Length: 127
Image (tube, rainbow, N blue to C red; front, side):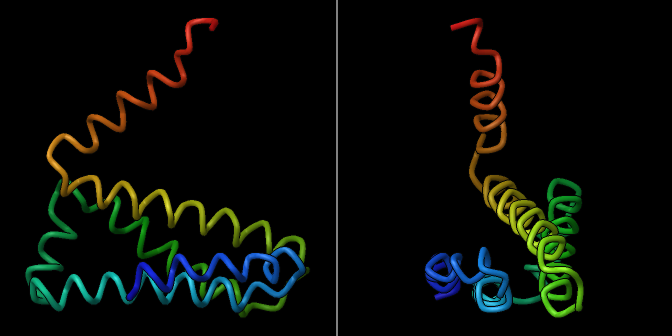
């Protein structure tokens, strides 16, 4: 349900661009939080916490949780609309990347494969 909720939030991206970021940010971040809680429900909160903060995932988890909490907080802080939208888009991109990197850590060779693909894409050798 959490991933579905996050995916469905993209129908509200127009509201974000129009200057009303709260619906999109809240739905997207709540979906991510629900996904995180549901995996904790399946494995147990203690084990979830242990896995999230082991050496392999610690930094990614901190970045992910910080970007998630900060995006919800920034959404409700009064500031100029342009700055708020810029900050929120950056935070949401960080949140997406951290979530993906965190997920890849559970797939054997997931991170290594992603790194090779990124290096290959960036090295385009003048093609």
